[in-house]
Length: 114
Length: 117
Image (tube, rainbow over all chains, first blue to last red; front, side):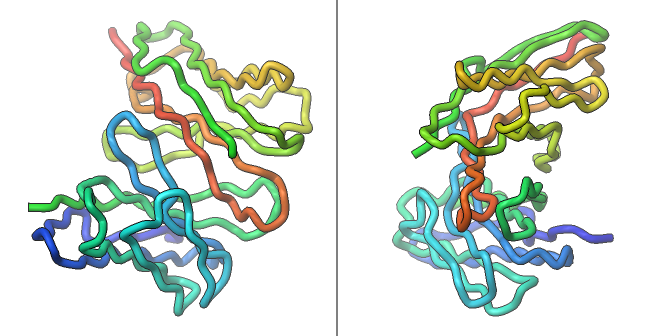
């Protein structure tokens, strides 16, 4: 079945440590996205990529980094510079372009700083 | 920058009844897309319905329909014959239609829908 796989489902991080969230898709989509979800704030865009080896900052990129070495993969690293990393993180993908393309979402990763 | 506002943090509806969730947005663009996403307790985001701004006709998908008022920048979701499985968080989202914006979505803060017997 085609879809987006995020791992792990739950992740715990000690303060001062970097941690990487995995996102893999087999939908052959060019574009991929990372969103952060906090209670009462909806989803906010962290980074997005429209093509391999290229990515752009979203609205809340500070303290995060990404890479796009393969079309299928778009890992997100939460660095120690992110002051409040505890949140639910959602990865999405879509066909790139200007058409009314649906974004498909993974099941998310819950990150908790301990 | 575009903004999306959902003014109802929580709504409740009885099974088989109809409920309307509100959404307003602010944009200076003339061409865009609007979406309603559902997030059940599993937290998987599921597309419910979409609307192209250039279309005057309101979108419908089975029990789900929208009331799109472009001049008022309003995009409400109507759920008819509500079912227990409709209980979820509902997010309204905006996407620009301009080249180079990919499918970046701007979300509202969500409305939690409770369905009662």
